[in-house]
Image (cartoon, rainbow over the protein chains, first blue to last red):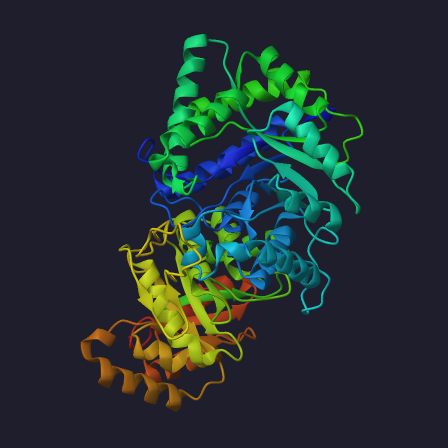
Length: 332
Length: 270
C-alpha cells in the first residue's frame, strides 16, 4: 500500500467551517473529519493537516488539538499536523500539555505546525498585541520544550523529545527561528518553484540544524476542463471572502483594496494545481525538485462536497502519488 | 441521583475507552476526567473519548484562572460540538489564582452565550481593545463555534465552591468535605438566589473500595445532608455494573418498599 512517495505526502486542510457558501452541521463537521482521517489512513497518506482561526462567523475551529484527538481516537497510523496552529494566541503551558496529551493518547502521531497568526481581532480577543507575536512564539517554543523535558513535573510525550515542530511562514525571522532551533519549515501554498528554491537555499545555509522542508499546495485532480474551471471559481470566491475580510493589504482589508486583492488572488490562481493526474504530478514534482521534502496537498475546502472530497482523495492516492518523485533522502 | 465514574487504572486510550464503554453499557450517566500523568489536558482526552463511546456525558475538570479563560471556553465549545452536546465543564481554581475564579466563571458563561459581547472584568477585558491591534474592527467578541448545549453545563470544584454557588453553577465537592459545611453553603446560596438557584448540580466525589453497601449509605447521607444529586465515583470501569445494579437502584427514590431489597438480594447476582 505505502509506496515511498506516501511518506512525503499529507492531505489537508480541515477547518470545520460552516460558511455562507457551504453551511454544514457543526457536529457533523467533526464526525466527517474523523471519517476523512480514517479514509486518508486507508489510502496510505502519512498525515492529515488542520488549520486554526478564531472568532469568525463560520465556526472555524479554534482548538485543533481537540478536533484531532477526536479523529485520532478513530485511527491508528495516520499522523495529525497543523498548517498552521496559531501558537502565540495560546497559553504556552496549556498548549504544551494539550500537545503532550494528544501525543500520548494517539501513540505519538502529532506534528506541530507552529505559526504566528496575522489577524488583529484574534489577538485582541485573547488580550494580546499582534506586534508581540514573534516574542510570544519564541517563549512558547521554550516553554513547550521545558514541559516536555519534565521541568514542570509532567510525564513525557510519546515522541521524544516531543512532537516534531514545523515552523510556518516564509519571513526571514521564521526561517532563522526554524533553523536555529532545529525545526522544520512549513511554507505557504502560493510560492512558485523558483521562490521555494531561494527560500530553501537560505534555510539550508543558516547556522543551526535545519530540518525538513514542507510546503502546502492547493490541489484538485480533474481531467474535465469545465469542472476544473468551476473549482478555480470556487477557490477564488473562498479566498476572496477570507482576503476581503481579513488580509490587511496596504493598510486596509482586501474588500477596501480591490486591486491589491486581485493581485493576491492571481497568485493563488497561478500556484494552485488543477488538472489531470499526470499534469498534477508534474507540477508537484517541480516542487520536490525545488527542494521541498514534504507536501501537504490541500484538497479540502468548505465548498467541497463529501462525495467529491472522497473521490479526490482516492484520485490523489491512486493516480497522482504513484507518479511523485520526492527526494530519496527525505528524512521526514 | 446521577452517576459519573472517574476511571482509575487508565494507562492508555484503550483503557479509557474500555472504562467509558463499561459506563455506557451499565446505563450510568458518564465519565469524569481529571488531570493525571497520562491526561495532563482533560479536555483533549474528553474529545478522544467522545469519538469512541456514544451517549455518555463526559465531564472534564480543568484549571481556570492562570491563563485566559477564552482559551478554555473555545476548547470546551469544540469538545461540546464534537461530542454532540455531551460535555460537562468542571472548572477548578488554578492554585494561587483563586481570587480570579469568579470572574473567570463569568467570562466563561458570557462566552458560551451566542450573542457578541463586551466583557469588562478586573482581570480580563474581551475584546481587549488594545490600540496596537490597529486593524481590529471588532467592538464585540464572539466565541465560535457555539457549544451545542444552549447553556453548557458548568460546574466548579475545589476552592471554587462559593464563587460557583453564588452564580447558581454546579459544584463538585471533595470526598472529605464536611457535609454540614456543604449544607450550609447551599442553604446560603438558596437564600441569596431564591428560585434562580433551583436545579444546580450538587455533586460529590466518592471513594470506591468495592463495598456497595457502604457507598449506598454515604449517598443516602449526602442526599439527606446537602441534597446530593450527583455521585462521581473514583473506580475502575469494571465497577460500573455494581454501581448500576446494586448502588443506583437503592438511591434513586427517597425510600424503598418493604421487601424490595430482600427481593433483589434473593434474585440478583452480587
